Length: 58
Ligand SMILES: [Zn+2]
Image (cartoon, rainbow, N blue to C red; front, side):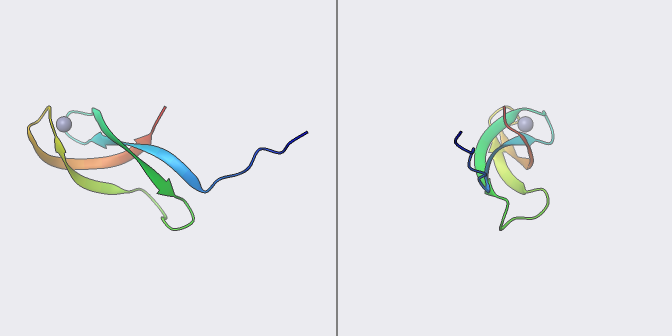
């Protein structure tokens, strides 16, 4: 039986803190990044830059 390789790279979604939409997905290296990631990104629904926080991608 082949063992499933454990990867440090995780796909995450970036959720807008204002409208709660998941506008972006990105990769996160768990070896390098501790804790939650936050980015100021453009939200097309709010039509401005808002804070996008890391959340689970499906
Ligand atoms: Zn938004």
